[in-house]
Picture (cartoon, chains in turn cyan, green):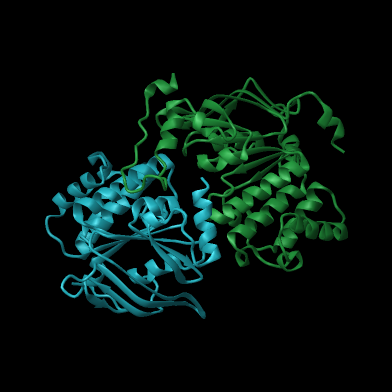
Length: 249
Length: 285
């Protein structure tokens, strides 16, 4: 079955170095099309580094990364880069302040030589429920939630197989977070979009993901489904602390 | 030393009808529209979304607003002392010494070019007029009081060499060194992860009780503040929408507070769409 229909993303024994330190110590997982994996852990546990290695930002890694059954190396081709897109924590830092939203959304289309740019930009704005008036504004003229929608719209424009989300809502208010999370859930339902979501907030991860990986010191200590969370006994005390902290409120 | 003041009848903080506005291209924008607060040496939480005016309300107490801001209030007193009538010099005696503020990002609050120890000693010499030798040992004590296990080692470290939680502890030690009467924690734990967040809040609570300070806990995280405050003020668009007793978040009646509570993801019903906050113009009447 797995060979007939390869998962959207498969990681095998991923090891990431930062200088002399080994930040990720052999992590393996796979995410099917339309599936989602959440990674939770304390700051410094290496959770964001996994995403950065998969996205090709961190290049000191060994192991296997496959997108749709196709192995991907350290050097990325244009097709590799198009297959996955990343959304970062701070939307203001991720958007060029001197480009309009139109320019920001057009750039990936130019890079990947995609046709019908006008129609795609308009459609992208509609997908993330941004008003068309936002198109010719600058990032600084939008609210935090709107900026994060622009980042998501930009990531979706090139029709990636996997969306990598690094704390996408931790810079947002709860009210705005709800809107962005609903948007991501809808995209997953409608487009069978696979994603990996990294967060220190277990509530967000449990809300969004079928499976949740607890990460301590560069390793997955436990991988649970959402239904197993309540009353679970985890293998690592730090992971347990994280779960207990979330369950108590 | 402060015994006389502590016995005085005036509340620690007394704000009446505070208004703050900023000039924009479209005329003046009112960021705070008539906030009143009277508090003693208790724990008050202020919650609201970004832009609700919760931060600048308390920054105005310290005279930390941009020069373009216009501040007015019927009353703004710290233990009976009118903060408006103080000049720049008078404010310097209040800032830090009477009112301390812990900010969100400790790495930004600390000087990257000075060791934690020398920053602490500087604070002690400035605010408490401590002699050099005494200041060093007092700094060690302070680091131990905020539960830093190896104070001697941490004294010699630069801010970039310590974790976020450790930096926030060091920051708190610096603020406490001036022995303020009122501690303002402005999103002091937002940059930290869930486990460390609770440890820092426990620490703040412990120090507030120990030293008999007043605490203002500014946060956008409703769950968090509910557990650490005696009173909770919910702010929206520069106004106080409602006031709740600590730990009684579920008793909230205002649709804004209820909306904020409802749109949080929870472990109880995962996977469903979250309710989205519907804002009503009538809230601003």
